[in-house]
Length: 116
Image (cartoon, rainbow, N blue to C red):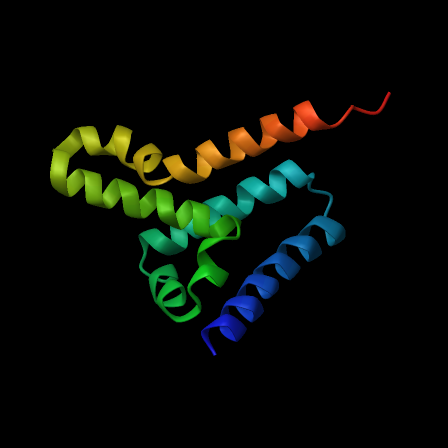
């Protein structure tokens, strides 16, 4: 059942993002930033955590999950390192995802020719 809930929640989040992109004049970049910020705010006020516990990867993989991960990393780093955690926590928590995005982007850029 956990796979079904992850699929449904992740699909719903992606559907919402696609609807916002299609039905508003926002650019795809604006929609991406909007969903990351919404995930960060929802995580900061404690609303996104229960969704992550219930849906697992369906809530952590889409864009709001990235914002949630950054806020959780800041909270943990502030508890450990005090004020310096505000600067380091988000990047430490999201380092694996950021590194994967850069490496996969580089691989795609090397493997394919751009359109002219």
